[in-house]
Image (tube, rainbow, N blue to C red; front, side):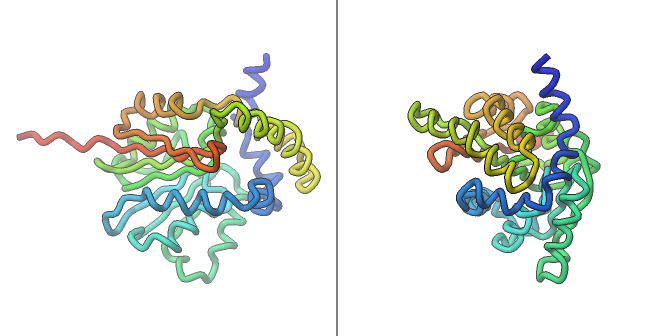
Length: 245
């Protein structure tokens, strides 16, 4: 019953994000002690270096990751962000109005497990703190593989559980007791931050998630833990097409 309950919560998680959207950015910065800004900037170092990159950001939320990318990475020509939460997209659109990068970013509602793009249509797919919320992780990774061009890159930033026992214990205490309390007080949606804790604890991280990426066909897969392992950046590439000669 518990597994089914979590499955249902993932299926309708976009409704929860609609509800917490007004305080989402504030709580991200507050509950991570500002580290989320550093994590998003760190992802940029792993973008492909080739010029005129077409980028897709899944579970884009209020577009924090996309905005960080287009402001810092000059090789990005166009960036599409999709999210199931209409309210998150609406807030993201307000953030990019009349900015120098407005013409580069497009935000729209969309499903990370059923991407409305053609095969091999983007050079890089990013996803920050969203993969653990999708209903079908394997299908999401398969869709990422489908829309990426040969040698295209997948970058997934996600919360993880530290391996060090002492750090892990402190982190779990924070996730289980501190985070839901503070998040609930500010957003008035305590259950949303209980959900956050549950998904972080149950989602496969480290080698387990790397194995899922490899199973989906990605190569040169690596996990880069950050901030004592509370967050991990996963990097994988789509194998180039074999020459017919």
